[in-house]
Length: 367
Image (cartoon, rainbow, N blue to C red; front, top):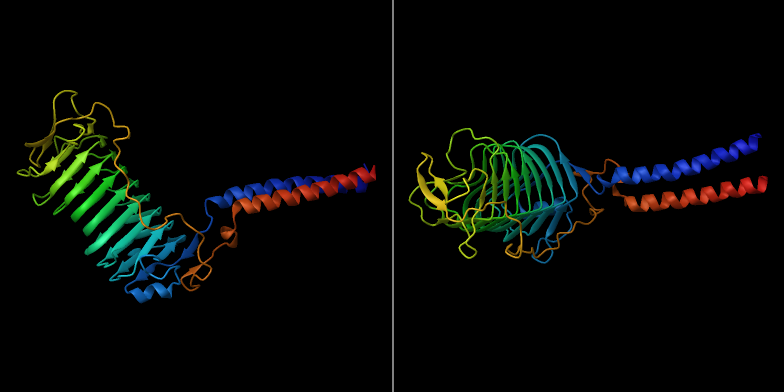
């Protein structure tokens, strides 16, 4: 084989390798697309939003959008927001390594949305307190925590929907909620699934799956909790540590806690239910103080009985990060992260096809 022929075949091989390699690059970049490395985001006044150049103006129709950040590090908080009244949304962010991933304190904003984030923290995934005028939506977040996935106190309206919570001892802790919906969350923690501490009213806890715990799936801690309805949940005990004699616990003398849906006459699935009779709800001393009148023989499957999921007024589909992001707070670690992987793949294939065509043409002409 002559030298020219060898070179032509080398070119042919390069063209094929180039096309294949661009496909691999596209695949490898997909899971990291659009994230911008950032230091912790600390906001303690409405004017601080402008310092970060977030898209939006902070109004109800045009909230500030905190999205597409990768905040990995150590310290107290990855995202800390306090004493603001501007509207904002936190979505499609990675927050990893801090004591608390997202912390809200004394927020005056009428509506806050935390949607579709990956949060890993040593203590709390989401921790919100003293935001008594706020409606908080926490949707579709994946949370790993050392202590508690989501802890919410002092909220006017709360919706915790479609989240996945793992690790830690507690899944969700609630205190001082006027109206709440805890719906279709998957919780795998070591001790307590959902804890209702104090002054939680008009709250529905339903269609959640709780596994891995050793104590209780649901605990009602104070007599001040009223009109809390717990139904169509799945509670699967991993291994009891002997602390309680039931997977459901509440304080005595509270007849305003309901462990079933009175409309459908259906309660919850308890993995330790005997299969006959009601399911006992006990106090911390093992005394039966309430009951699930209609325990389920099998884990419930959502049907037309599934309650409607509240729809946030803002579009929660993530978009690419604004090019005006402050360079001193968020800098790109890899420019390929901001390129559409499908575009990379398409360009690579087109170039390889052209390269291949030229190579084959040269081979043909040589012959």
